[in-house]
Image (cartoon, rainbow, N blue to C red):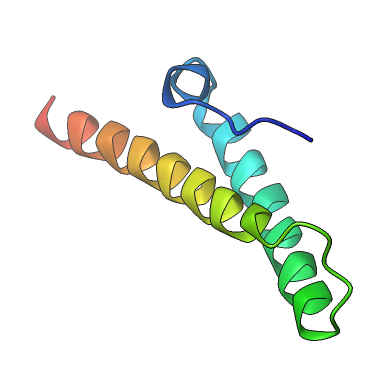
Length: 71
């Protein structure tokens, strides 16, 4: 099982890398939801993990956006 990405790991990435990760996790979430709907999902907790990772990424991107506006 893949462990969730921690916030400190995400903070070390550039904005482009974060946006790429967000796209990858959104695609994974779509696939997980599809598998869940068709009763093929092995680990339903993965949906929760992926949603939280996406939220972390969005939070970090927003923090950076606000810091740039203040500067």
